[in-house]
Amino acid sequence: MDIISTDIEGVLIIEPRVFTDSRGYFFESYSEKVYEKILGDVVFVQDNESCSSRGVMRGLHFQRPPYAQAKLVRCVRGSVLDVAVDIRKGSPTYGKHVSCLLTEHNHRQFFIPRGFAHGFAVLSDIAIFQYKCDNYYHPEADGGISIIDPTLDIDWRIDLTEAILSEKDKKHPLLKELESPFTI
Image (cartoon, rainbow, N blue to C red; front, top):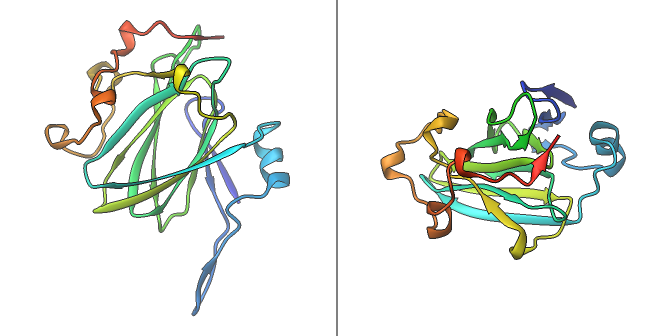
């Protein structure tokens, strides 16, 4: 397994060791003892899955403390551009982002710690996206920033005029309007 550091401390790209032969492939997608060495004391308590079509953008979401979530995400069918934005006031990387191409072929996983907004854009006809969370979903703690905030300077690799967003995601504030619940 290769652990790839990113420009933002704590945000990691994880590439599993994949064994292939004439029958197909095999890899260990999660082992608590292995991930404890990588992520420390993060304990995942909930798994989620979504299916979306080309052009769907979800995010940029977070949960406010005390229900904040770290996430370990991957794409098991198709491809997505996944993004984590640092929303921790006082962080030297506040407002900066890391993006990672996740595909059914590269088997990469992307770890997003607490204190980050998270979202993705679907680049393939269909994408099945899975993620582990270290805290349960609490609708009253929902938060978000606009996935199309131009000040974030994210290249989503899709035409934003054709992006498909939920009504909820269309209403998120810009980063400059956010009263961030996270501080360093």
